[in-house]
Image (cartoon, chains in turn orange, cyan):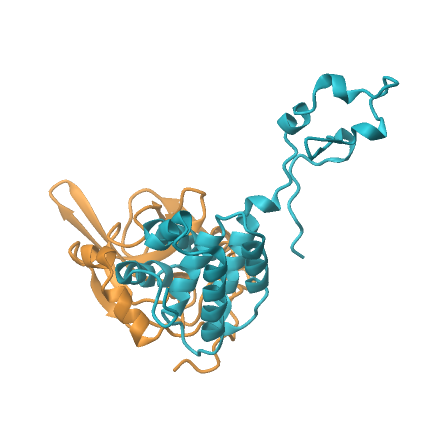
Amino acid sequence: MNPRPGRSITVQTYDGTSIPNSIDLDPTPEALEAARFSQRRSSLVLTGLSVQGPATGRYNCHGLVFASRRTNIPPCGFTDAVSIDDILRRDIYQKVRVPQLGDIAIYRNDAGEVDHSGIVCRTENIGSTGKVFVWSKWGALEEYEHPELGCPYADCKLEYWRLKQ
Amino acid sequence: MKADIAWIEKAVMCEGAFLLFSSSSATRYVRMAKQLAEDSALKDHLACGAISIEELINRARKLHTVIASKDQRDIEEIELAIIMAILSETASDQAFDLLADFSLYDRNSLAWISAAARNLFQQLAKNLVDASIPDAQRVPIADMFGADGSADSPENEMEYGVPRFDFANVNLVAEVDQG
């Protein structure tokens, strides 16, 4: 059980700006069981994803990428509290065209907002075609290694960001 | 409708568990809830009169109370999010009040529901003051002038139940301040 949910921890960008965050409640086993029966999830399993970590409300996708699995960014339910683009800028990332291991994958919706993020964990070249695998946490659900668009955020546009050299 | 079992089909509840619990932002959460509302038969039941808005609101309040008492995120959250998405598309005053009420709760187990209520409340068409020109044009031109020919006679304050358009004191679109 998550001790004292709702609390926040100190997280800062590279330039010292605080990042609002919160640790959320865990989902119940019944809710997770329901999610496992989702047809959308079942169809994604066929694309070759693999579970890498347990479901928890302790951290979300941005918490995995920017806070070492310690918290949810933004605080649960407060989207406006944090701009992921601002974090990328303050942490001095730059957008790149060709992804490589360790890059950050950013999934941007039609409105230009960041819906999801993950870390590039594997790239494969099959002939002239490159295949990219991303490691990410799906909200309060599990951590997965998945093909870049083999996730619930495939309706978003995908970008890759790398620390500026 | 029975009150002790979910009003949403099991398949939609499973999709809801996956789509809502995999959301990391309130905007995505609400987008998914609206998508699930479209997939659910509950919306059709409301449209054809098999269920009333009052029944939906009572169900929403009951689920809200159940969720408030929990210390984990459970499946009641899915049903409530979908019902809120359905209610947000009605023009009901009760639905408006319900979303305004739910948006104010500050409790861990209700964090996502409160955020969704705030987001849906902001999106309600009712929150926008329609100041479009066509309403003003509904007043026949001849009636725009009083017996003395002046344009601001008291007897012409109302026409067809629509207040006379006041060009001097209107913002094109004014959103209700939610404090």
